[in-house]
Image 1 (cartoon, protein in one colour):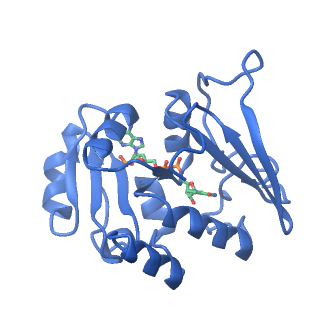
Image 2 (cartoon, rainbow, N blue to C red):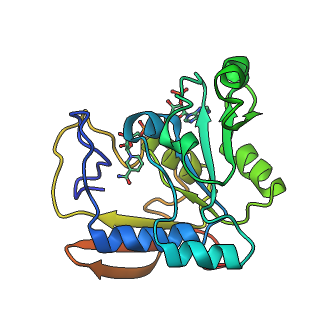
Length: 219
Ligand SMILES: NC(=O)c1ccc[n+]([C@@H]2O[C@H](COP(=O)([O-])OP(=O)(O)OC[C@H]3O[C@@H](n4cnc5c(N)ncnc54)[C@H](OP(=O)(O)O)[C@@H]3O)[C@@H](O)[C@H]2O)c1
């Protein structure tokens, strides 16, 4: 995020926050995960591939009996997702779309050739989604945004670790996407999160927070 807590600009043009060294660090984190989750708006706006980029890391995963990249997961109510988006079109791993019940028929007709559509109830609860992913073998889930998804995982107390990278500039536009929305978070002035690490990566800084007893497990 920017110094003032934004994930993106308001202009619609993609904002570069990380540097190459941090993107490589994120790639290493991805390689250690079973699945990666982004919200449907991120799929639509950013068109991310969500693949492990480094060939050595991909090879190491394959040597461990895994697909080169983790399972990709997204969440939607409206099911307005393009089956040709890179989320669906790239990588060998499974793609899961958790869809609120009213949009499931639409999602299946649009996406069933490229993804597994999972009915998520009237509104998809991140706890139910996490439990379903666990039943599918996912033990380590990396949540990459955007803000609505961060907010739901953090307010529900489902995140074991928060990795926050701060880029050295301001966005300064309240129309842009903030890191989180308003909400009732389990960490507040009366209950501080544990700062586990501060790491300078060139001109950006990584802050790692331990949010549960499971912090650091299976990494
Ligand atoms: N800087 C970063 O590291 C970073 C990372 C990721 C994203 N971003 C930025 O963040 C922005 C997007 O963030 P955002 O908060 O607007 O959107 P988002 O979190 O990516 O996605 C929101 C969408 O996800 C679906 N959704 C969320 N919660 C749901 C639930 N409980 N049940 C069913 N569907 C649910 C809905 O999709 P439908 O509308 O399809 O119903 C909702 O509109 C983009 O501009 C992107 O560039 C930045």
